[in-house]
Length: 123
Image 1: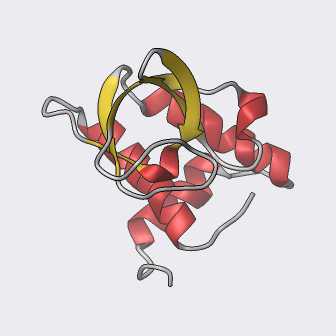
Image 2 (image 1 turned 90 degrees about the horizontal axis):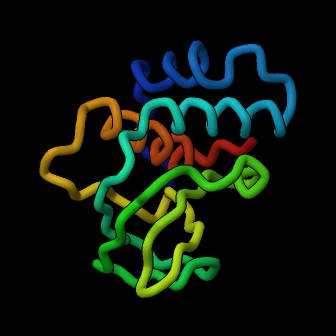
């Protein structure tokens, strides 16, 4: 079930993120650039949903260090995290930022991605 439409986020998505994007690769590139420009790394995040493609469990905390490579983000946006003794790429959709000193731009950008996913949009 998708969340109610939010005109402010819809405007940002269509006018800033996927503007002039004509195919899936261009939309994924638009999202990757948008998130890479706006997320203030590093920041702490908490897993709020388990996904089969990720080892993270609900309530597990990780340090998000950067965006995953563009080539790893062609189907969904992924970020690099420190997990146990490794660095992995995990879907941003499963993480909520939990740092106390997180800047507004980072919170907004993560919220925009979560909204995109919740609306059922695809590249």
